Structure formats: structure tokens, C-alpha cells
Amino acid sequence: MSKKNKQFIITGIGTDIGKTVVSAIISQALDSFYWKPIQAGELENSDSIKVQNWTTDSVTILSEAFQLNQPMSPHAAAEIDGVEITNEALQLPLVERNLVVEGAGGLLVPLNNKRLLLIDLFKEWNLPVIVVSRHYVGSINHTLLTVEALKNRKINIEGIVFVGDENKSTESFILNYTDLKMIARMPLTSEVNTEFIQEQAQILKESNVL
Image (cartoon, rainbow, N blue to C red; front, top):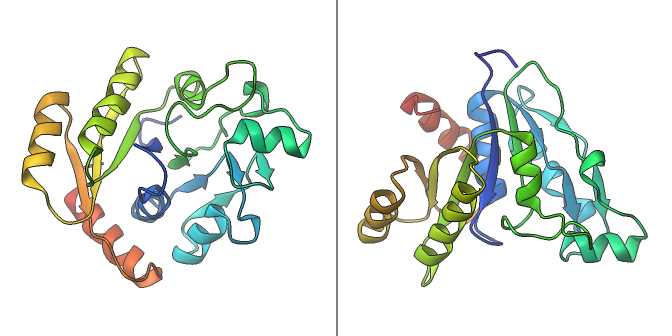
């Protein structure tokens, strides 16, 4: 990978955090490749399809390694579909350009029944991770647990993206405790569309934080 190429993994502190929207914004800001290795459920409106619809042609969507029919944990969805997810089948795409990789759920999501977790792939891929956090009761705990799990595996963390309105108390505690930088705060919107993604991508690009 060229030193000029910026390649990141996007992970969330849980489900329904806004990880796909953040991935689309960062992909657009970097004019990158986007890869969602595992899609479980919603195959007719997958995260890859959403990102493609929200972004311009400067973002290239790579095909998923696994498309699973049931909207559940990958290990269970794969078992129902009669396939096995292995790390050998999930090799990081070798692209000579910026790359955004979106995880599935949180870090400790099981991928098969042989103790393979999503965080194991992150360690193997050796890319810096961007943590997406969203404010709710318990989000401090979930964010700190996510950061601690990454640090325990000695996985480099690029920083944190907060989703939603500013919460100074929560954000300052998380940033001070983890000693991480805030990459951006991305607002909630009633409708995610191309206009919203472009607007937020331009703000992120102008901040020059990535």
C-alpha cells in the first residue's frame, strides 16, 4: 500500500449506531473503495447498495465475500445457509487506492463456531480502526469496552466518530479516558440521501483530520 493511500476499518460500539452512514461519508470524503465483507440479511437493500446509492462514482463498491440470507449473527446466518465463514475466505482486498472496510455489528461478533470473531480479522488485516459511537444511556461503557478490546489486541485506533447531537460530558470523558482524537461529530438526519452524504463528506474533507 502506498503511503499516500488511506485505508481504514469502520467499527461500531453495537448495532444500529450509524456505522454504514459514517462509512459512506468517509468513503466519499476519501473517494475510496468501499468493502462490506459480510452482509447478513437485507440482501435486496444491503449496506453496499445503500452506500452506492448515497455516493458518487468516485466511490467504488467491492462485492461482499459473504451474502447471508438471515438478519442475525454471521455465524448463525452462515450455518442456516450451509456455508462456513473462514479467515482464508476473508482476505483484505489489495487495492492501490484509499479503502474503507465496514465491519458487521460490534467487535466480538462471532463469524463461525470455531472461535473466529470479527476482531480477529481486524487484527489480521492490520489497518487502523475508526470507532463509531452514538450517545445513549450506556454508550460510555460500550465505547470504552470497544476501545479496550482493540487496545488489548494491539490494534491501532485512528480515532472516534460521534453520531448525534453534541454531548460534552460524554465526549470529553471518552476522549480523555482513551486518549483518542475525535475525528468528527456527524448529525442525525430524518433522511439519509446523497445530499446529506456529500455535505458531511465535504465537512470531513475540509477538516483534514484523516
